[in-house]
Length: 135
Image (cartoon, rainbow, N blue to C red; front, side):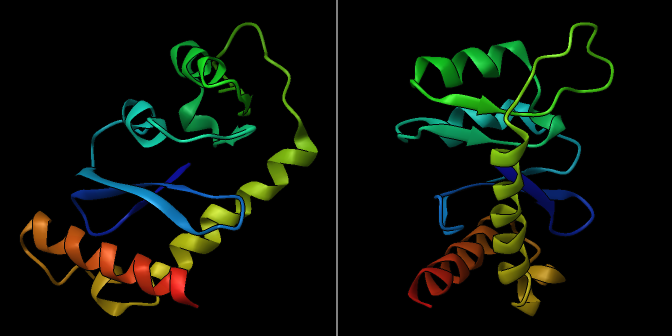
């Protein structure tokens, strides 16, 4: 799971498969917290592991991931009192989501957010995601 800013006031939240292909995309206002979108990104997906960055470190999300029967591979936020260990070697694969965001941002319309309406912007993101799947 990951997020990327697509414009000054919009954030793209995305879940990818193990090959870095987009599975689910949610668009929110830029100030919305990342972890708030995680349950919706994961709903109905099957995974052995869920890799996410420190912004997704929460006990509630870890419980959601556990309920899916998956392992949470999430580094702890530095403010956490009791650090939770994670598989550092598995975490290295999280770069797949960053590369997926990079592929989407090759589409200038996403990188610069030409669309004023969020629904139009999200529609183009979905179109670009489909093109990423076809490569």
